[in-house]
Amino acid sequence: MLICWFGLAAFIYKTRLNSLSVKERKYWLILVFAYPVLETILKGSIYFDLIPYSYRPLNLIEHGLWAMSMGLVLYPLLKNSILKLNQIPAFLLVFGVVIVIGNLNELAEFVIRQLMNLTTTQLMDAYYTDTIIDLVVNLIGSGLGAFILTTQKKPDSLGNKEYSKLTIEN
Image (cartoon, rainbow, N blue to C red):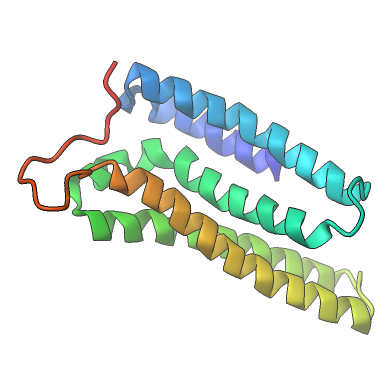
């Protein structure tokens, strides 16, 4: 998964990073490198059971963080559309893109487990339940990432006529 993360980041870095301000680039680069560190810590904690009985909460945090981070890392690709759209369509754009990526990932994991016969009937029940919960948490994380990106566009949406730009000033 981290190979895909860095592949996507490299593509965005080469093709779209110039669309960001200097501060936005700094925040984007911090996210690109900080997320894998957090992901590795969470996965390691789960795998080695560092905190007994913590699988479910850590797994929820992991998936929510992934979805939120994916929305934010895609920002350079979606920035022009976000700025042109009103807040709700912009939210739905970011939310939808991240949901599609997250759901494809979850469903691929589930199918791979089935095709490789890695599961017994009991494990299959557990994996199915885990997949459904992960899909729901992806919805929440995607919504949070989309909310972060799109509410900055028009922070004065409570009645003011002027709109601020999403760009963080240099």
